[in-house]
Image (tube, rainbow, N blue to C red; front, side, top):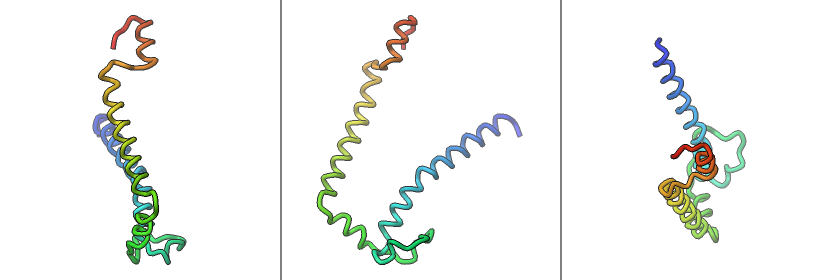
Length: 107
């Protein structure tokens, strides 16, 4: 096996492991949301739900403040993306810019 194939295998394998690791909390949240209220405290939880109920999700969505909080989160996420995309366009690089100025390099 060539070094290039080994490198690609390690990179893609690491990416898959990292993606699975990042998605596990979302899976657990979805399983808890679809578990009937009577089974919510069962331990250990099955990997796949034996019974599905939207009662827990309905209770969550009917709670006061959920919709405004979700909208606030979406607004903050949108502002974060816009600022994150706008800052590099203005050549603002924080301390990297100052260090580059002292060294005579330009970004």
